[in-house]
Image (cartoon, rainbow, N blue to C red):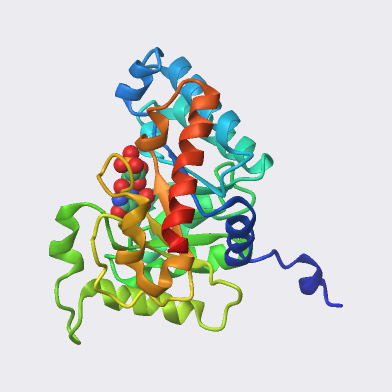
Length: 284
Ligand SMILES: O=C(O)c1cc(=O)[nH]c(=O)n1[C@@H]1O[C@H](COP(=O)(O)O)[C@@H](O)[C@H]1O
């Protein structure tokens, strides 16, 4: 056996499929909005952020497939906020959740390399199982992240058709070769995932709010579906949006679960209710 065979990490897609099969596919977002800190009776400061984040990790990291901290809500507290984020990533992963860092990075390739070093290098303090990235500087600008993820056994989730209504003016625009810009990006993702089993490590972000994705989603990779709960979509919408690809969907909920806090049991119950609704919707 060669040394690379000994050390090759298990690809993210395989780890995610296993987590989806054993824990169910739900992703819960950790989005410490100032209004949520207040609703939980916490101060809008580093102590409140720390308490909120620890409660989310304690309540959910041992049961949901994916936890998705939204970096912006930690960055607003500066370096001390980032320290809270680092600890949350470490503790969530230790409890068995896959951590998807929602930082939506995207830049020219040389700078993308530094983002990849920050989030997708195993030696980085913010190393996460996966990272959200934006391909709208050109899909190939993401290459350093795709390469770093492959080396680390991590994944990337590439924005395709986002949940916000404003996204359509860019994402539905007609690309040079015909078809939508989003479809061009989805086709790139399919090419990256070709031949991967049981699931590729390059995921697409497709909003659960879209009604019908009107796109070919057969990318052989996971499909992150934000927009459930506070943005108005429900698990019952998933089959209509995703069609035959619904088996690869990771439905994502942040405020819809987080408003149940701060009680740990109530957070767990809220996540379990969404998980049940997803199970019912996908089975039908
Ligand atoms: O990449 C994301 O997670 C994402 C993509 C998208 O199209 N829409 C979207 O809402 N998100 C994120 O998903 C979360 C949604 O939060 P809630 O609306 O509270 O469930 C936020 O952290 C958003 O930044």
